[in-house]
Image (tube, rainbow, N blue to C red; front, side, top):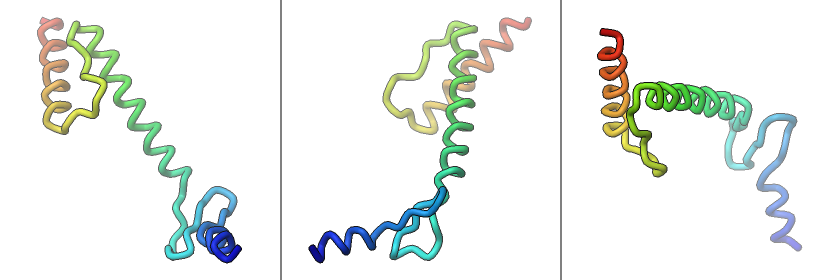
Length: 84
């Protein structure tokens, strides 16, 4: 029973935040969701651009920063070639 009470004390929920007993600042879930939505929207626009110029999409695994930058650079180059 004591272990259960400790678990209940561990996390306390507020309206839009989850507050950990060890943390002084609450974690704002809305801002994290907003950031992730913005990132997904940006990645989707890159996917649409890649399909439009015929560049293959990145693999399903998480790409490294270098791989992503090279892929984006290829897309921009292909778009510039199509404009000429």
